[in-house]
Image 1: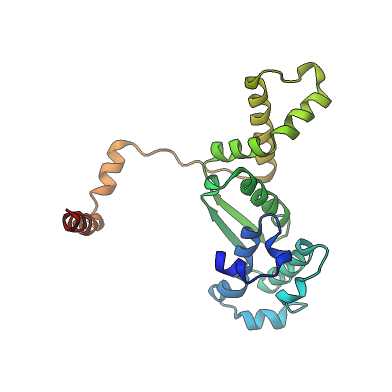
Image 2: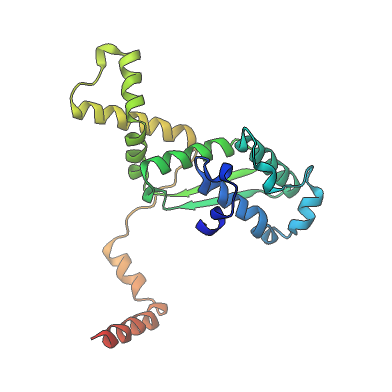
Length: 208
């Protein structure tokens, strides 16, 4: 992805959530064959041809990208575009909020869906850290009698604000529970792991 971003115009690389937009662009240019549709055919069917250099100098790159994505989705009908994002909880607070803002912006397009793999509590913490001052200021302005004073009170306000923020963007949540010890043991005892363990054993033996 870094190599891909490096070839973009400065106006695109400076966008918040550029990594997310880059992912969608990469899907647009490279992966659409998986839908049984040639990218060349899509370009012919879309209302306007997408040309990345045309983004240079535009005052609102996100708006133009949105319009181009709408063209792609129209060409894909009745199929849909699903974008998977994993490990969002490993991003910095600033990156996390930038990605969430991009998701919120693009998910309003009909036919475009996002599936996020993340530790929701960690993402909420990152959002709270990034938007914490706004959350505290909002509480002071709307409910001055409940304005937080102590650090613990400020943390509670940030946490509440972050949960509400995520709730407005994420429509459906599917939790994945931690496996029980016997489930892990049963999983690791399956035949496909025998060869993997043998390879690891030989590798460690060679290091000694």
